[in-house]
Length: 85
Image (cartoon, rainbow, N blue to C red; front, top):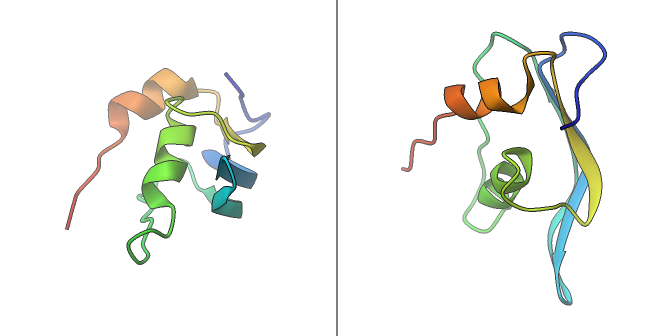
């Protein structure tokens, strides 16, 4: 588990994912402040689900990393919600 040194919430640093020859997620970098709601929006195939799978530990990134505040991945997993459209 990767933990932030402070309470920045979730930090995505240059996260990329490749399946064989297909680059499906390209250098996603952002911060989601702790205690706030963050929306991942975009078109179908933009990489939202892939990023979530990486963040929740269900897939490994090809490059980059996702860091969590001191509460850790278990707290994030229990508070995560996915609302399909």
